Length: 388
Image (cartoon, rainbow, N blue to C red):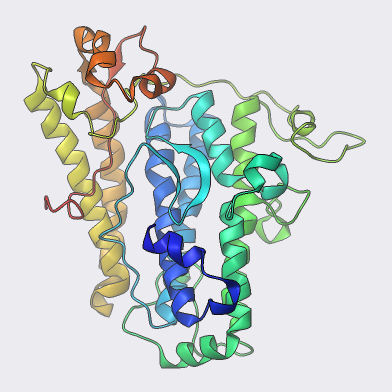
């Protein structure tokens, strides 16, 4: 059992300050783990504007803000947010910490199947079927509710830890990231609970029976609602009179303006070896490796810059943020204009069942193997793998 999963299985009575710090690091890893999945789908769009691109990008930006909020909470309690060594490995089941164990996490192009995975990531518990709800942490929101309860139960220790502080910085208050202020007027616990509310409201919805983020977010749709619009190909529009929102009635709430399906580049879903078996037979492997490593290098540099925002010299925090933004844009450029323009040779595509006997079904589910196939970004953290 992983350390994160072990922490989440700790009985509530033992969820002390050390537990809170551990789960906040798990939350950082969890929020980050969605970013490669969402980014790969977003990058696969041939035209990078219009509703689908904008919807995925808006969710991705908020996931980054949620990761920052978790990092700021951890830093406020004397912890050290670890970002440079985060290394989500795909394909896998579930999210860090053992959340949503039935979810299939795959780095792949946009497809209806992948969008259904996105809905599973962002789903509130009340929209899940009974079997999925039986899990210890069926949803991201349930992890944060456990965190909320522990903060309230150990509020005296949390207050003392906040006064003591640590070496890590608070980042991004003037660009919309939720920060924790040691000089807050009032009960400082309110800041932690507000940060958790931001994360869960934007992800799953403001409360049970709604998938809207609420007035605090100008009544925009939650991440779940935005992805549901893409699944149904229609804008959210509450019926009149509205039935109770449930999994069986959900489609009735998405009958608004039509959303067209975008042109998608047919990238090969990333197998667990990061295309190693494919590259072993590709006559253009050297050129492909160059582009894949360029992308991985930019991704790794972004992770380092983000880590430096919290843990580097304070005067370098903003320059580090600037570098991270530049590297994020570099990821899009390298992926869209270099990596995804490189074809996987047709003879290799025909041999995928032999090259990946255990993963072939997955590759066929997330890639149209009857059309020309291209490489996609694989999101290797070279630093975490000891390669940089």
